[in-house]
Length: 58
Length: 467
Length: 58
Image 1 (cartoon, rainbow over the protein chains, first blue to last red):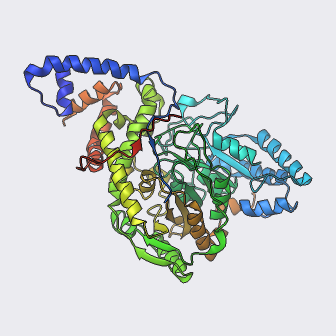
Image 2 (cartoon, rainbow over the protein chains, first blue to last red):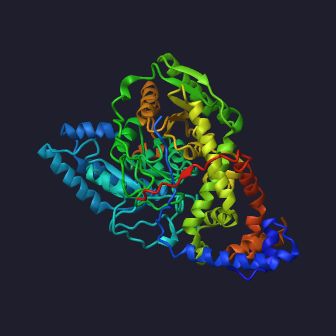
Image 3 (cartoon, chains in turn cyan, red, yellow):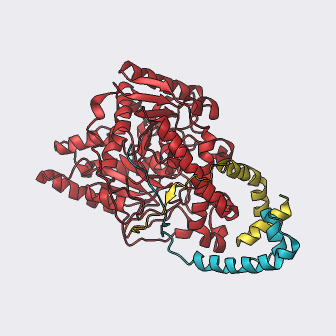
């Protein structure tokens, strides 16, 4: 993740939290960033998602 | 030997021992040598393998043990289909030296059917970035006029089949990549129902929209090719566990009794087509009506409403596939792919999920629209092929395409040639069926093709005498 | 969204783009946003996604 300031990241999403909530939000997002980084991989290129699109015959 | 043969014609001659698969293969190889320096349809010509395959087919022919309609037929694979021991690049610098250890399921099936592997065919980079001039290989050119676009992403298959370098080939279709090149190169090409043919071993672009399928000169040939690639694959999570229909059984039944819906607003209002394309569709409807079909117009949501969730889903899923490389090797991709997929980094998870919810709403709408119909008809491309250097980078945002609605809904959709425009390049229409009703789509397509003379014309460059 | 906010969005994604590359994407971003908006109109709260989770994983 880049070192972009947290306030700028929040602003870019369009969210406008109360200033007092920012430290808590920043800590939460750091945890989510870490979790997302773990999920991201490295994963095999051809790995399929678990959810599938299914069609029933007419 | 006739200069151009369909698969069905070649099969009959081979079965009657009147055509040598080796002779046919050498004829195609010679044509590749002559035309491909201009067309750039092959990324890799597997000449030795082709001769070996053809020799084996010839031995079966002499022994009276042919495997079926594809035995001894020269074909090619889009270069996103893994081929064991044969380079598979995705037309990208990132996989420039990639040699898979296993065949994809479809490659394996066609090989088991006795086909002759001529080589690996050009694609837009990873089936989305093209036409690009900044990749290790040039883009394929349209045999009807090499200054013009083939469409993509199955660009090499479109060019090679139209010019008679191969008799059929594989494409893949995530937003129109089989039907687009089939339309602009004057072929028949079908995106089958989602789940009918395995995607295993094919480089993924967007897993819930990706389809494998065949491209050939005629509808009948597409039916033969699809028969040999369809079927349940327990290791493809999207694969449908159901019996495969006989795609040629109804071919000669004509259009009598078919109930046909025309999504006229797609090609008259949502993205108005050229006069030649419109005339082609109207002419086809006249033929169907004369054969006894019932025809009426149907209205669904605007074509852009179908395109928008399609592109959001495609961009999100494709970005997820390519994210590691986009982060580490952004500049090793061609400009078109990296710019198109970079937007995936800016999509938020809820937007992807909303698009998936919207997709279901639209699937239900299309099902309702087809409830008392057998097929739908609209255009497959707006007009003849544009010049290759005039293809806009953001075309998908500017005008909705005719093919994405049927990736989104997963319905089988066939593009076929309906004549030629003022520039002498092909125009086309699209026939759409209910889920797993490919046989009906082929029946209608074959009824049209055999009632018209369009299949007797080939690109001038491929019919010109040798210098 | 202005150019700076867009740049922040790109940076936080983890992509490393030159200013010139960012400018190309920034110019097309309104078209992309319009596509996203069109793909996500209001739907009933009960609207299900088209991909299905099936516990029999294969």
